[in-house]
Image (cartoon, rainbow over all chains, first blue to last red; front, top):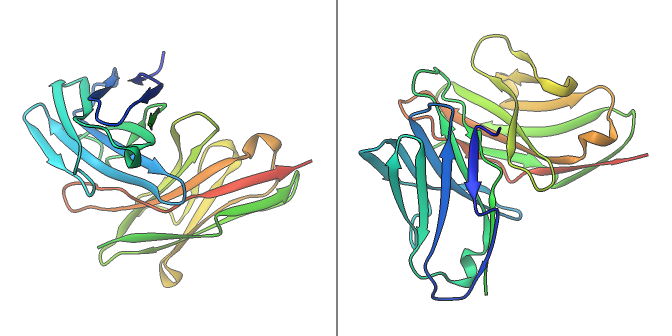
Length: 114
Length: 114
């Protein structure tokens, strides 16, 4: 079984709709991250969380919100989706106790906003 | 602030040929450097990482990378390409300043022809 899972894997929605992407992990890591990937731009950090009570904005947080429901669960919400939020979204985790803080990625959610 | 430049959005090689994917970094403090691979419709998988120990780092699937401080480079190589190596490769940098924020390059797609 995968250590980091994301649901849904694919989603098509319409402009203005609220949508939630979910991430779960069984690695026991305390840190979790949301990234978006766009062709030619690499991955950009949206939000990150060091633990349930510690949530921080990344470089492109506008239009997004997150919720850390438990150590193992980190959700990303688009309150009112717009077409330029069409992208591939990745969740990642890392372990505070691992000195290099290597990040481990989920399989991604492909989101299309029409 | 740290940054990463990957030269060449696409690299084409023949099966059995040398693979060389270029990565140059910018960092004001000693960096940690990573190579991730993304196979089609999958998440990012860690190939290898440099964490200030040995400058020549060996990773999975026969890949290796050499940290060259004088050239600020961390190029990825493999002596003999396989068809299964066709994927997108991302170089990333982080610094040991508490939070290991990863900064990704824009990626290089490796194409392997028979």
